Length: 237
Image: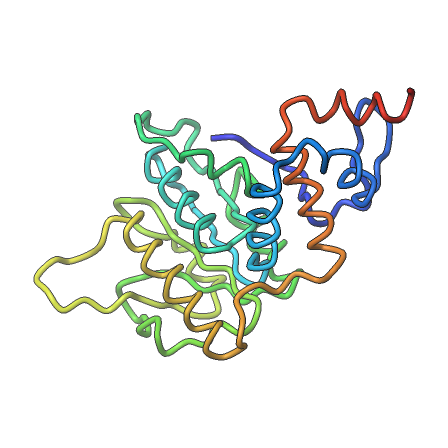
């Protein structure tokens, strides 16, 4: 899993080998190297990105599950994901994200408490997925900043996290199966959240104009193979 500790949306400037570049400057320099079709795709993706909902993956041990959740999060327009690595090693798996992590801001945490405290300070409601004492997910409105937590594949979220959560939700099930695989549960939850936000807010994306410009610049940098060289060349030519 690729870790992008720096949040591309919150940067005031991009730094390349000590040289600062504003978002508008990055876009102007790199745009000739991005096809019109790719530009249109980036514009659409950026317009529909949200920071209002962020997944938290607590203590997962299977890298394949992490990758699958990242892929679903990216596909459903969620820009930021928090990964709490309670275990020293992920269980190895051969699944791939098809490049989803390239387009996300992934924050990694060694413990649960600092992650939750960070999110609470940022104004997020902490919603834990659980089977017991949990409301159906469709009873909750997702028109406010929400961190949705998924726990370990076998034991679920930790007691520590449950004690710090504001709400507990579950995905309703009508069959004999006791639970969904975490990657399936996440995909269902993310789709529901997207639909709920569109219904309540009229849109899913919620980035400001400045945030959209910064993210567009970051995506241009991630789309052009020799982006750093081109940026530096423009500065010193």
